[in-house]
Amino acid sequence: MTHQFSCRSCQGPVRPDSVFVLSDVPRSAQGFGKTRAEALAMSGKLELNECSYCGLVQLNSDPVDYHKDVIRSAGVSAVLLKQKGEQISQFIDQFQLHEKKVLEVGCGRGEFLSVLNQYNVQAFGIEHSDTSVTHCAALGLNVEQAYLTAEARLKAGPFDGFLFFMFLEHLPAPKDALIGLAANLQAGAPGIIEVPSLDFLLRKSLLTEFIADHLSYFTKSTLEILLSSAGFEVLGIEEARDDYVLSATVRKRVPLIRNTTNPSNGALASEIRDFLKIHSAAPVAVWGAGHQALTSISMFGIASQLSMIVDSSPAKQGLFAPGSGVPIRPPSDLIKDNIEAVIVMAGSYSDEIFQILCADFPSVRFVVVAKEDCLVYPADKPVLE
Image (tube, rainbow, N blue to C red; front, side, top):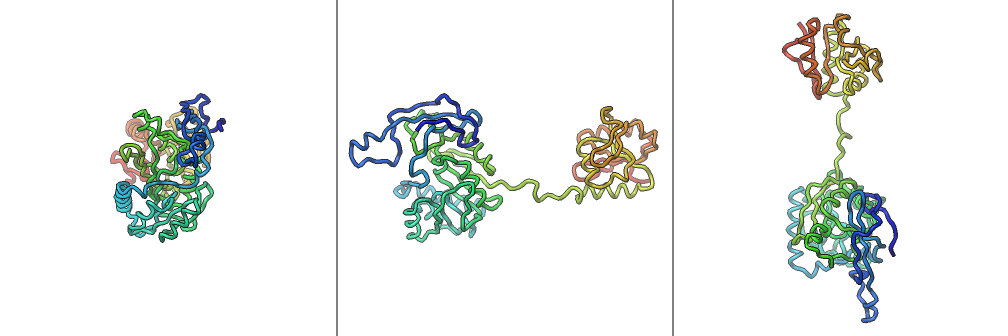
């Protein structure tokens, strides 16, 4: 059924004009007819469209009935199983996953999970097909019957690593599946995600590789966009298996700021308080009414110890700093109010301001400069005589 739809990756608008239409193609890769007449009727057309935003090429059609089940013939290829064994062994060693919990998403009948299970890891799999799950159990494999959605939570999670081979392209909502996967992983958990390579198909004009089972066709660029938007850091994407496959090495994104030190408890705050204590008997000013100074003064609770904030911008002079209420005044007021101690806190302008203080404000005897997470005490202006 042809219909209008939003991008499966970024939910942006899909171009209404078809990228390409293929006629007289099989309606599925697994729908084999019991009779010749039945098989001849199993054909139709594929309409591929491209997202206007992220560029993902995708089918404008519904998924095949069995899209939640993994069906692969890897078990009959000794060469592929050997390659997967080498790949999995390298993955385990690279990320030190020995004795850790590693998940295969869409493990089918255990073709690759059996390989993973041979290594020193706790191997787990999920699979939607009940018959495949039963088959895996008979092989002694630890498999949960499940299908990834954004809300899915797996019994054995969270996992320390994962494998996701040649299944993402089948899913009508690949981003939801990846979000659900990320929710079942430890922070920083690595993984391998593999899909057919559209880069290769276009490069070689292999139009016969398009099939109704594959709803999304990824280039390196569109695969990275999807993975990044679903909570993964992409460590690298390579073409594998004679370039037919894109193999992405990823890890669940680690929070950047969750475990950082509160600035009010950091080294810069402590050193500024020490400087103010040294000069508590005399008026002190901060030079700079930019975001760093405004936030620092407010968060560090030092407003009552400052006489003014100095700034060269006339638009700020005569006003009061948000959050702290410290008056903002022109540089000339340093001389007018006999300010002898100044904290320069103006980001990339700090060095320039320090030079101005040295050249034009000899009455300012003590200067320190805020640099990232500490104070710098220039030799030209001592902290204390």
